[in-house]
Length: 380
Image (cartoon, rainbow, N blue to C red; front, side, top):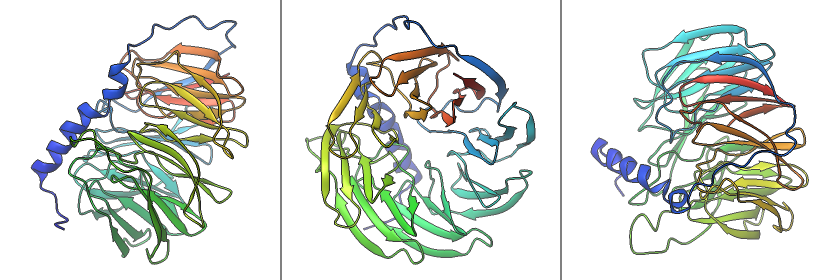
C-alpha cells in the first residue's frame, strides 16, 4: 500500500468529511431550548482571550490543565498560559506557525502539532520553543505523553514515538487508511506502558510503549453501505481505559466496552459519535452525533438515562464536574446536567460564534474556549 497521500487527496478527504461529520445532526431538527427550572447559581470567575483562530471548528483545540495552569492554543499560532484560579496570564506567545491540535503537557513540556505537518515542543514554564520535529503528514489529534516519550498519530494513520528530550524517533507504526476519512482522529492513550489507539478503519490497537510492538487489534464494526460516506466508521473519540476495560466509540458504529486482556467485547451499544467519553465509578457519559446525551452503566452497558432536548445540535464531549456533567454546543451554549438523571442544572450562552472545543473541568470549576478564542472560567 502506498503510504504517502498527496496534498490534493488530503484536501478532498477533508472537504468530504466536513460535510459528512455533521450529517447525523443535520437530520434532526434543532430543538429550541427550554428554560432551566430552578437553575443553580452559576458564577463567572474570570475571562480571557487566546486570540481569533479557532474558526476551523472540526478541530478540537481544548485547553489543558496542569499544575494550576490552563494552557491554551489557537489555530493561528497564539499560545497563552493562564493562572487557573484567577485568569492572570503567566506567559503568552505568538508563533509564526499555525497549530492543528489541542496541546498536551508533560514533565514541564508543552506539545502541540503544527498545520504544516510538524510536532512542536515548548517549555511549559515560559513558552520557549525547544524542538520542532517533522511529521510524515498533518495531525489533528493531540499528542500523547508518558515517561519521556511523546506520541503523534497523523491523518494517514501513522503513529510515531519520539524521545521528548532530543526528538529521536523511537518507533513507527502504520495502519491501513480507508478511501475516505473524517477530519480529526483520535489520540493515542497511554496506560501502564501500553498504547491504546483507534483508527479510521474502526479498529482498536494495543502496542507496547517502549518498542511499538503489536499486542492485539480488533475491529469494532464492519463498514456498511455502498457509498464511501456510509462506510465511514472512524474512531475519532479517544479510547478511555479504566479497571482493565477499554471504552471506545466510533462514527456510524458502536460504543463498546472491551476486555483489555482478552480483546473481547463485554458489552456494546449502537451509537454514532466523534466525541470523547467521560467516566465516573457509576456512569459512562456520551454525547452522540445527533445531539443526544447518554449515561450508561459502565459494567453492564445498561442505559441509565438519555437527554434528547439538545437534539440537532453539534455537541462537544461531556466532562465531569462535581455532581454534574457539562457539554457545549455549536450555537455557543454551555449546559450543566445532573449526573443522576440528566436534567438540566444550569445553562449560559457564552459565545454566539459557537463552541467546538471540549470544556475542561477541575473540581466545580469549568473552563470553556469558544471558536473565537474567548476563554471563560465558570463555577457552579
